Length: 73
Image 1 (tube, one colour):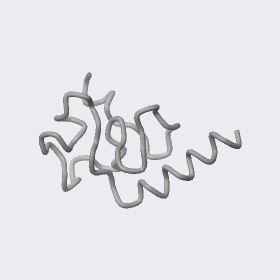
Image 2 (cartoon, rainbow, N blue to C red):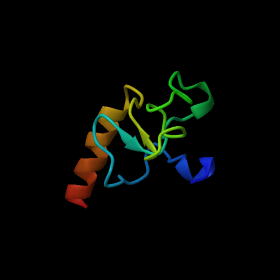
Image 3 (tube, rainbow, N blue to C red):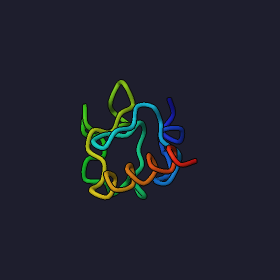
């Protein structure tokens, strides 16, 4: 998967692999300045399964918001 395909907008609909603690792909607004960028096994760009295991602190709140939108929509 290409880097462009792994960049997912922060407000994009949830992926089935998204949870409060992880995201499928990278949802960072600027992945170049992410503290976890390119860390093996943590960053979506270097993980074999394309999972970011340390999304931003704002992700949990955004996940809940998106999840509630799915349930209500």
